Structures are given as C-alpha cells and as structure tokens.
Length: 563
Image (cartoon, rainbow, N blue to C red):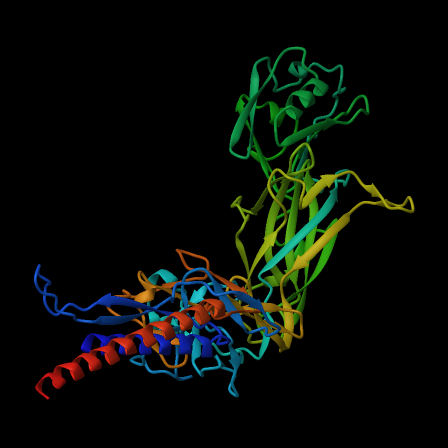
C-alpha cells in the first residue's frame, strides 16, 4: 500500500509538471520540465523475501533546449540563438549585493524612466559603450567581457543619451591632382662671370679653374662631387649637375656672357654646394661658398598666404558640441611627383584656437606619388608617416579637442589621392583638379528619434541628424551545466553549485549564442508530447490506485480470519 501511495504521489507531481508546461505554452522563453522516476528501495531483496519501497520523482528542467524563434515588430525585443542567458535584476537601480537572475525571455520594453524590462518585470543588464562600440565600465573606462566583472554592467536605459552630436573623427578624401601643374620654383643661384660662351668656352681656360677642380652638392643628406675636366663647357657642367638628384642646372645662351643657374628641384628641400678642390664655383661667380639654395616653401606658408595654393578643397566638419566648421585642404606642387598640403581653418571665438593654430594651420604635410599615379607616401613636413595618425584641432568654443584621421588613400593604390593629367568633363571642358568624394563622419546635434537592438547585441540609437550610435551592448551569461540551474518565479533562473559559475560573454563570442534582434524565443514545450504524457500519467495514476484497493481487500480478508 505504501508503494502504491508513493506511485500516486509521483504521478501526481508528474501531472503538475505537465500542467505547468501546458499553462506556459505561450510564455516567452519558457523552458519545459519533464518528469523522471527512480526506484526507492528500503531493503535489499533476497531469494526468499522482497520488500517494496516505491518510486521517487525527479523533475528535470530542459533549460538548455532551444525554443522556436519568432519574429516580432518590437525593436527592443531580442532572442538568443544558441547558448547563454540574458542577465536581469529585479530593480532598475540595483545595489552591488543585489541578486542576479538569468532568463531567455527577451520581450524587453522601456518603463516610464526608459529602463528596459521584460513582461515579468526584470531589468536587463549590459555594458555601456562608446561611440565605436567599445565596452565601458561604470567609470567610463574601456573594459572587456573577459573580466567577468558584473560590477561593469548597468541596467539598459534608452534615455541615456537623448541628444547627441557626432564629432568628426575621420575624413576620407579622393581627388586627382594635375600632373602638369607648374611646380613652385625652388631656391636658385646664378653665376656672374662674364666672357663665357655656354657651348664653346673651355672652363679650364677661365682664371681660377684648372683641370681636376672639384665642388660638392649635398641634397637630402647625400653629397655628390663634381669634377671639371679640360674641354668641359658650361653646357657640359649644367648637364652633369642636372644628373644629381635634387638640383637642376640651366645656362643662358647670349653668346659671350652666358651664365649658369642652379635651382633646387623641390621647393621644400634646400641644396648646399661648396668648393672642395680649388675654387671653380667662386671662379664662375657663384656667391656664398658654401652656398645654399634655400627652400622657397616651408610648412605654414599656404596658411599664412606667403605661398599661393594650386588647389583648395573645403570640408565641413563638426566638433563635440555639434558646431560646424569649414576647413580646407590646400595643395601646392613642390616638384616632380611631390606636393605639399596644409589642413587649415578659421581662427576666432567659435572656431580654431589662434594660439594653438597660428594662421589657422591644423596640420601640414607632404604627398608623394608613384610613377603610375598612385599615392607613394603621406607624411608630415618632418617625414613622419601620417597614415592612421590623428590630427588634432583645438577649438575656442568650449568643445572637446578634435582628434581626426585624415584618410587620403591607401599607399600604392589609386583609391584616394592620385596624380594624373587634367581630365575632361562630359561637355569637353578641361578639369585640372577632380574631387571624387569627401566623406566625414560628424554631424550636428540631434534629438533621439528611434532605438533598436542590432544583430551584434548593441542597443543603437538613431538621432534626427542621421547619426546612429551604440550606447549599450547586451551581456550574455553562459554556464557549464545550465540544466542544473534553479527555477524562480518570473521565468528566471538562479545560479547553483551544480550549474557552475556564470561567465560574462559578448553575443556570439566565446561560446555565447548570437542575439537575434526583433525576435522572441518561444516556449520549448511540445503540446502533443504533453498530451501524450498526460494520458500515460493518468493511466499510471489509475493503476497505482488499483494497487491500493487490492491491498485493502487483502487486509479485509486477513481481518475476516478472526471473525
């Protein structure tokens, strides 16, 4: 009879499990439970005796079993495809010691204060993020999901940033510079000795010049020695000098008083020359030994107006307060395949800080091009590489300092700045400079107009200025044995010793499931299975009642013996 009673109790509990499963058939994220049974033995059986014990009931939760994902129109609903749980709390302002709960119910909606919570009233947790989506702790410092520091998590608040401006952090430019542009003339020096015919006068016949006399030319750290031999003319000397990198030499052709002119090949690079054996340069009347062909362009000359630009590209950018500023990329050709650029703007109360940016100069640099017209190098005026380097702009209107990457293209490719000849527009007009595109990622201040989860698990807010930026990222908790978690009211679970400790994960990383935006995970209960189990349970319950009634009849027969 006791064994039968234990069977009734076990089947009654199993029916309770089935009832719960059916009643939660439409509960979002509900995980069904199945009944399992094991024997209960009170004493070991022998060859001559058997002691009935009964049955023990074991409810087993199918927490790790995936439910069907269903699309929804809610922009703040989210489901997990794969392993893991949303981390929730029962308060919008939890303390550090408040309990964590875990759920698959992602039917989140904002409450009156903008905090996201599900139907059961639990508030979802995540990391705050910066504009690029990097995870932040509560102090605004960059953190990592690998830290597993739950103190980094915050209740997700859609009202965290109601108004936002996007400061410009990146500018992409693509333009063609006219290959045939006349370069800015470099430093020059001209001889003054008279009585020379450029193509007939033997230089060693001139007083002060003898066969074997030498002088040096130094350009960009490289020194070349030039030797004058018997029979060399001014024309020969000019050809020999022009073969040296960084300097050009030309002669006049008046016939009797011809001169030699030395010109630096690049306007921003000086050239030094000096007599080394006797004084052939002095004999030609080139003053200043050693002499220098001084640069005719130095950084800031375009900004100050000392040198006129060949082309200017205006760009509108934005600071951290959303204020618009017009800046310019000014360009001048310095020599073959070599250009100077200056990134400039206006100074004043609402523009660039004049002390930090004299004449409005933000950054100067040098562009070189390869023989196929592609970008060869992109450096500052000192030769330091500017690729992927931030350019700093300081404003006088109280906004934060701007850190901007000026992307002029990929070195060796033709996807940004190029140098080809002038082009022709559809009407047949010559276009010396062509701007292909100017892209910058800033925007003026705008109010929030929409928000939604993305497939990467970010809560992204859209503003009236067109800016979309992530402000939070959902945190996913994974467990070694999720089926061992403890069920709790509100379709949430608690961590147990058997389940193991939770690990914080970003969606889709390190074993965590992916977030499916605008979707909900349905209950994993199968109604057909539950009805079948109900029939089996009903029959088992009925059979156990027969055990009790039969035992009662046997006891009644035993009592009748005495009568």
